[in-house]
Image (cartoon, rainbow, N blue to C red; front, side):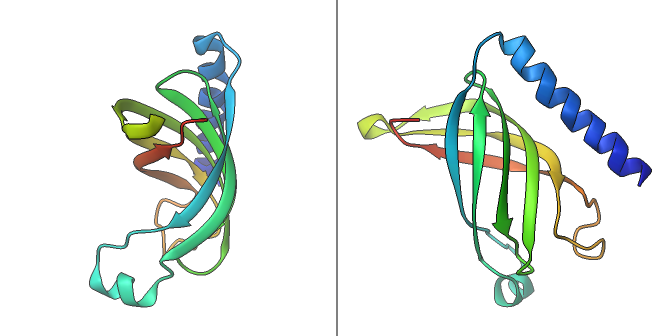
Length: 134
């Protein structure tokens, strides 16, 4: 419980500090969650690979954003999340599409301690494919 409160305070602080540091109104996007890539053989065969869900992202500048949403996790349970995203690497693609890569960290629900030892804390590599309209 103590770790959860500390983690929540850190995420909330970052979520509030990023907009202030950016000094601008965010642009909002709808996020569509589709899939997980499980690298271990047992996980590919026994876990859910299709993790459908919806979320929103507030992009404050080219590198910083916050996200929140819901998806069906790898254990076939609903998961809500609140994340701070850092994407310093950008690649322009044809027809106005782009890719942003970096890291994300925050809070996630829907997992048991034996499934995700850091629950409710999460951190992961992040790869966003962005349509021309944002």
